[in-house]
Amino acid sequence: MAALGRSRRSCLAVPGSSVKMLGKAQGLPADQVFLDLEDAVAPLAKPEARKNIVAALNEGEWAGKTRVVRVNDLTTPWTYRDVIEIVEGAGASLDCIMLPKVQSAAHVEWLDLTLTQLEKSLGLPVGGIGIEAQIENAAGLVNVDAIAAASPRVETIIFGPADFMASINMKSLVVGALIPSYPGDPYHYILMRILMAARMHDKQAIDGPYLQIKDVDGFTEVARRSAALGFDGKWVLHPGQIDAANEVYSPAQSDYDHAELILDAYDYYTSEQGGRLGAVMLGDEMIDEASRKMALVISAKGRAAGMTRTTAFTPPA
Ligand code: GLV
Ligand code: MG
Image (cartoon, rainbow, N blue to C red):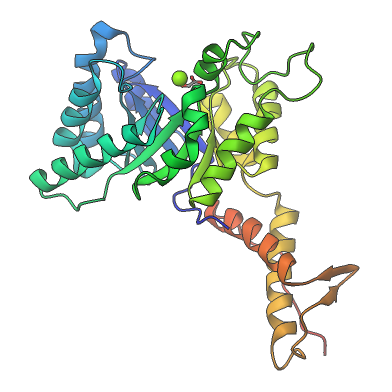
C-alpha cells in the first residue's frame, strides 16, 4: 500500500487575506491547514495576503498540523513571487507548497527547482519542502501520472472539482453532487484516475471542496464516496466540516479492531509456533496473505488517526 505519511483526513482552507481566520484556524482540529493565496484572495489583496501568511506561519501555534501554502498557478503573474516571499519569509515553518491547476510535469519541475534554489540559499534542508499538486483540468488529468512522478517532493495529488467541472463544461453548478440526468457518478472516472496515479507513485490522494458549507450531511455523503474508493482525505472550508472529514476518512472502530486482529492472527499462524500456515480460519473468515495486505491498509489509517484497539488476539491453547 502507499505510505500514508502525514495525516490529511481534513485539509482546512484558510484565505491568506483574513488575519482573523489565520488566527482562528490554529485552534481547530484539522489535520492540515492550507493558507490560500489563490482563488480565495482577490488580486489586489495578494501582496498583503503573502505578508499575513508569513507572519501567521512564523508566529502562529499550529500544534502538529501540516502547514501548507497554496500559491497561484503558473499561468498567472503571481506564482514566482508567492513562492519566493513565502519560502524566504517562513520556509522553516512550512511543510508544503500547493500548486493549483497543474497541467504537466514541467509545472512541478519548475517548483521543485525553485524550491531547491531557495532552500540552498536559505540554508534549509534541500528537499524538505513538499509539493501538493492540484488537478483541475483535462490537461492535468491526462498528464497525472507524469505529474505524480515529476519530483520526489510531491506528497499529494488533489482533485479540484470546481475548476475541473468548469474546465470540462460539466452541466452542473453543485460541486460533488450527482447529476439527475446522468445515470452514474460523474466524478468516478476522475477520482479513480487520480487515485491510480497517486497509488502508483506512492502519494496521498485528496478530494477537493464541498461548497454548501452548512450542509454537513451533503458533505459527508460526497466524502464517503471518495473515502470508499481509497482517498486519504478531503478539503474542508468551514469548521463544521472538520469532524465529519476526520470521521469519514478514519476506519470505523470495528474495522480497525478487526484489521489489527487479522494482522496478529496471521503473524501467529504463519510462524513456527502457529504451524507455518498460509491460509487459516479466523472465526468464520478465511485469511491469507491478501487479507494481511488489506488489514495493513486499515490498520495504517487507524494508527495514523491515533485510534486505540479495543480487542486482542489470543492464540489457541
Ligand atoms: C478547488 O480549488 C476547486 O477548484 O475545486
Ligand atoms: Mg480550484
